[in-house]
Structure formats: structure tokens, C-alpha cells
Image 1 (cartoon, helix red, strand yellow):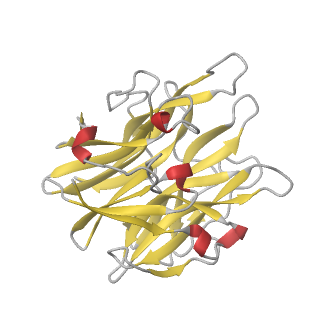
Image 2: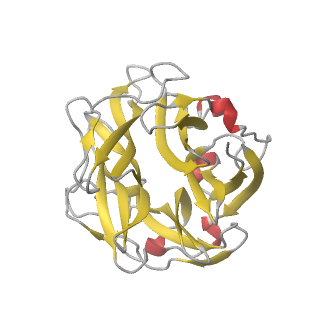
Length: 320
């Protein structure tokens, strides 16, 4: 499926970013224009006086073949949420689509917890200026924890098909410690929801739509779906529950699945045909993928080592 790897196409450290952000261009997500493509990404700023980060949304406009950067946003695309809200401490990622003459963004809001590190939920924001800035539909999320999805609902990817909105997203199953004294790590899977208006959603509550490859503690995230040549294609990332930050054999890698009905998915990671070389920017980790069809050409965008700290890359695909 990989026709040509284009390498790393954007490095945030080479540009001036909003909100005093210096590094990270995580989860690239595209919005196509007539003569360029806008790529939204999540970048980070260090909390004053702390060793923690807050994630902010930014974008870069590029040629549609990702051969050159045209401009980078200099103002905040969306401010973080207020005190006590679900997106107070970060937004990552944001999936966008055009709807009724507007640009809608489905955000993943982060808020810190005490017993565990974070929780997440999905919000909706709307742009009236072609995606330069967004405003919230409301202060709360449109999709969050439920009876069988108790935490960590996020990573929404939305398409419109057959008169319905379809959302694929991450939901948390449990927190798990590697040892009694270790900080807890999270286990999450990919689920599916539908909506008639893109705002009110019906979840298949707790239903995992993809089989595990690494066992029941496999973590699955960032689903991205396109329709191409009569078939739906999904790329996502997955990893081991523990050791993924320091051990490349347990780090994120990319998975692949296909469907003809948006309901039943056949997973076949090897069919993606993704290969790396030792020492390259994406050799130790491949994460946060995004599929896009630009001027009829399918592309894969993704982050490499260190969770996208130094940018994202792209590959042109052959899909069948």
C-alpha cells in the first residue's frame, strides 16, 4: 500500500508557533482547499513553574503533495477550556470536516486527575472563517464516559455516509499497574457511534470493533477512515500497555483494517506494508496516523519517534 514515503514533511522546531509552543506537531489532520491543504496538529507549551505540558491546536498550510510549507498559524486556533472543564489542560487531537458551509472540529479534551494522570472526552467546535479559528458549541463534551466506557473517551474521527454521521473513537477499559508502586497505565480500544445531526450520538457502548493483536491489554487509538475505490480503509495505532515510552518493541505502530459496510472490519496490519530503517526519524515509533484523499491521491500522515515531538511525515498510498 505504501507507494512512496515522503519522509518528515514538517518540523515544529523550525517555525514560530502560537501560545509559546516550541515542540510537538502531534496527530496531523487535514482540511482540503482548492490549491493547498491545511494540516491541524497539537503542539505543547510548558506550564509555568511546572514540569507538565498543555496541548494547544495549531495548523500549517502546505502544498497538496506536502512538498513545501506555505504558512503556519500564529494565533490560537482554539483557546483551552476554563477552570474545571473537560478540556482545561489540553486539546489533542482535533478532527475536522466541512458541514453546512462551516468547518466542524471534533476535539479531544484533556483534564488532569489525582489517582490517575488524565481523563478525556470529546467536544465540538465550529469555525466560521474557513478553519482559521474555532468556537465551542458549549462548555461541556458531546461524548464522554458511559456505563461500559467509564473513562478516556476521545480521538474522534467523523465522516458523513449514507445520510448519517459516523464516529470512530477511543474508549478506556481499565487502568493497570505494571508493579504495585508503578504509575498506572491505561488500556483503551476503538469504538463506533452514529448520529443524525453530528451533535447527539448513539454509542455501541463498550463494543470493541477491532480484534487485538497483542492480547487483551493492547491499546488502540487514533482511528482514521477514508472511502476509496469502493472500500473503506482504516489506519490506527496500537501499542503495549507498559514500557511503550522507552522500549521501541512496545511502542506505537500502525494497524490497518478494511470494511464495505462501516460496521464489520477486517484487520490486516501487514497489508499496510509500512517499513522503517534503523536510525530514521520514525524507526522507533509510528503513531497518530491520518488518512486523506487530496486531489484524488490517497495519503497517510503520521508521527514518528517521541510521539511527534519533532514533527510529522507523509506517504503516498496505493489502495485497492
